[in-house]
Length: 285
Length: 264
Image 1: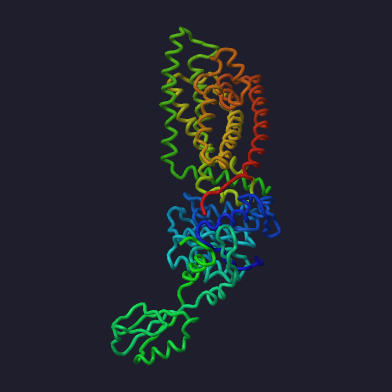
Image 2: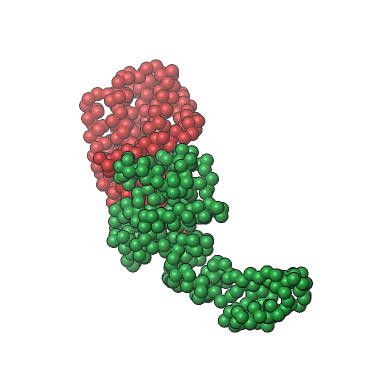
């Protein structure tokens, strides 16, 4: 992983993603193999490495539950050996970036999950780490909360050059945050590429939704195209671009009637990933 | 010094956190009251059955004050081994290990933070109860003299319980080990019966084990705060603290290499 890179690290449940992150942070000792993070061998120099990395384990809280988040922030300032002045400046900056200023004096147990996660990610960045490891940071969050966190993390990457290694089951996290992705399964890398290439290579299907001025025939069909749904005025179709050229589908569609509306889209990234898990990754169906 | 201040901060935050539910803190500390009352009944009967005012150098009042301090030390201690085992089982150990501090010093600072208020309340409630039952302690200043020994006792308990807790890195559930330790401490530490009442051969064995330094030493010192006994207790505690710390560090290093963290 390059300095300041945004790297996704995904795979089916049990693939070994969390284990890898724990090894990279020095919490687990591998039985074999080698790793280096920022020049340190993690399990040998765990404490020294800790000054330079931040970690968020989405499924567990790191903020002291019964106390306001501010108390944990100040504690972290001491643990990471920041000056009181530095700590205060840093808290101000992060409060603004993560929009948590009003939340810092509320006991953490009273915060919603979304609010808490913003505080948690902010806390992991207090000591200006060079690398941020996120293990399922958006688990359980609603759409707006996820967006908030993704924007803030992206901003930190742009402004401070923090590298991000992200594990997530949410394809949206991947699309929003990562430029490159590594897919693992059974502890092995099964695929590695830029996120943009991922879509292009595996996405040979197109979804088409058409709306016509007149009623559609009940037996509407085009050769080489799968009809998903036929409504009164519209149809929903799916086809493989490697089998049926796009322009032939479009000309058949316009021959069939006066089109009032048309939408052509890619299947969600989720489907792509599932496809990879099933095909390249040899996951049991 | 920056590296010391982080442990002081950890101590402070756990101290603050222990006050999060004051009702629970106070309620739990009230437990010492029925304990002391039961001990009183037990030993009153024992002394009168023996037909003596003094047994093995202790009066009924001495015995009660001894037990009060023993219980204060014991009840003040947080369940460190169980907490460490839970941290491993639920994976929160990841957040403890991912920080730039010494794991053992962190645990010690956190343990002391959880102990202070609990012990203070135990001492207050226990003290009032025993005062009401048997009157003032023979040497009230003994409490202050015993203070360093109380801290020494907590350090000793910490060493053993941290080792038990570290075994969680390998076996996950440590309740069997804590149970065994507690029973050994009861018997050889003089938790329920001051060691003075034991037959001589058993006393000798007990006095050479660490348990007596962790319970009998400070509690007996409170009752008979002589300079000679103070030196005895403190030097024996120091020997055990050095020995157990040494073993603890070794157990820690090996445990760390074998840790499995739950949860993906």
